[in-house]
Image (cartoon, rainbow, N blue to C red; front, side, top):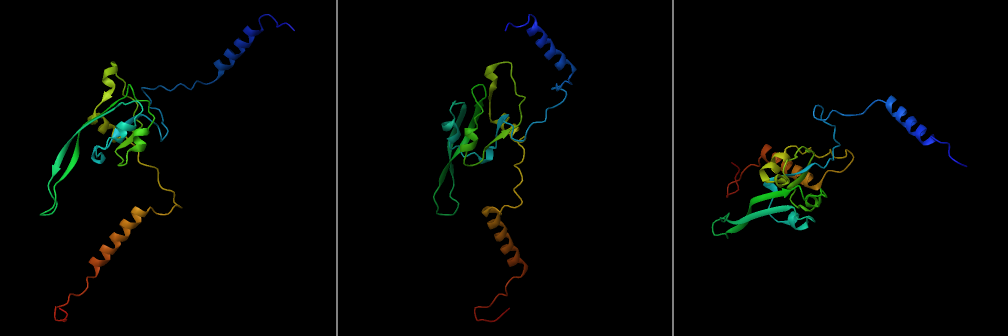
Length: 189
């Protein structure tokens, strides 16, 4: 059966008329900020205090877009007669977002929780070479990271928190009623 001439044009115009009568859903972006989902992947924020310069994030990055420089520093002994220690000190931490594919592997492999997803997405640059952001900028983005979701009310307390709470209760109980001190001769004072 042969198609009716002009039927394709009529179907196209019907779609256009249906679309014209619907309400638009355009958001006026610069004037109104979008409501982002809680797990939005914007940029990576650095919590510098937790970074031990283990280089796991840089080694595991499939794009090799993380640059880390450090130096060793000698830490004096904690107790007299103890041994001096050495530790790594972070000199440079940079991420080249022109290479980054936002896979999140660096965040997942960080054993010390130094990297986090920030929902910040307004970091466009006019020159691609300016998309390499240093640790100062990454630290600024750290403060835009949302807090973690609340624990499930029915879940058991994490062992770290339970242990810390029990220790604090023992210290409070010990300070509340101190045991009477005794003389070496067995008399109470």
